[in-house]
Length: 170
Image 1 (cartoon, rainbow, N blue to C red):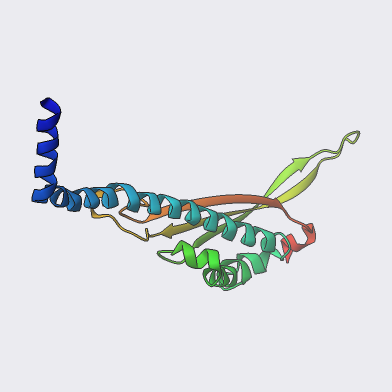
Image 2 (image 1 turned 45 degrees about the vertical axis):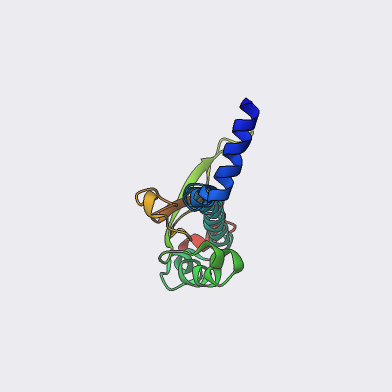
């Protein structure tokens, strides 16, 4: 008898259409708090990889160039490479909010070869690249959360040895 009543209620419920009326709010909640945040989280990973790639490109060029050309605001490292990076697939997917900010400094590291009592300076170039990205699907409910409702900023720092120390004074 109990099973008969449950079956009767189920037939009555599906016939009245209440299951359809619960579908829209359920779909809304699933999209707003499930699918869209996952898409934004994946894009945060792409954004970081893109910022890291830009920093590596700048480091690779800065270790070969003379110091004056590296520190030039209109030079290859600070202007040309970021412009070309924005036209690549990874730079285009990352959706940068504003142009990248690059800070470059040269630092000596004292080094003493084994068996010698003389110290030599081993120079490194340090590049700090700061890039701000906006989320592809800005979710209104997460307005203050970086990467989900507001732009997220990454600062990537890299360091490489200078290939030729005579370039430091040029």
